[in-house]
Image 1 (cartoon, helix red, strand yellow):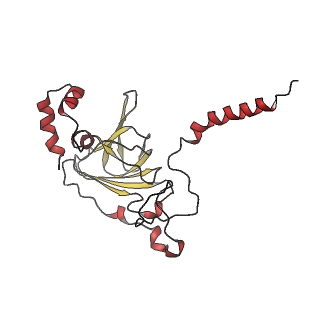
Image 2 (cartoon, one colour):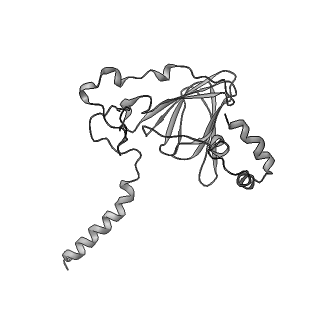
Image 3 (cartoon, one colour):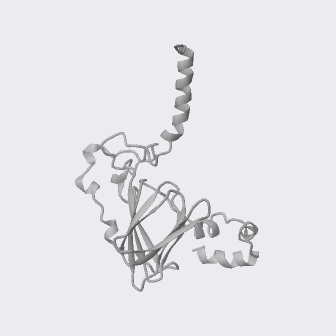
Length: 223
């Protein structure tokens, strides 16, 4: 049997690394390099692995607990919905841990409008009410189902999705993410309330409508 030369071994190792790099880079938030790193949000800069850490001597028990999701959200808006975020910005102990949660309150008929989370996959549980959950795949396939209390859903990372209260009372959802700061691109605001605004003729062409239709839509999202 012919034994590979050292140069061949090096070449094979190099090719193996190239093949594995996409897999190594495909995770969500980077793994933490310490037991915990309560975010020091007073620091002026952000490190690659999240916010700088608060000195361990200044970390307290209260840093690891958060009651923000106990508060009912204000749904008196155009969508009849409210999202309360439990991410690293509101709960600094999540820093570098790669997780976060949201509370979603929906009034009767309320809608959490079509949006995406660019940095995370979402899972959620309906706590109360009757909620239509839907998302669209990159192949333009629409998946949806009406869920009741105790039922769970998952939205793959980056896909456009929504939740709508189709019951007669209020509805509550708790969602979880594999990112400390998943981000949210809410499509109506992203398209019609950007700064500076997207030109009307671009949106009119994209949606195949007259510019006056775009002109009538933009003021609804300008506030």
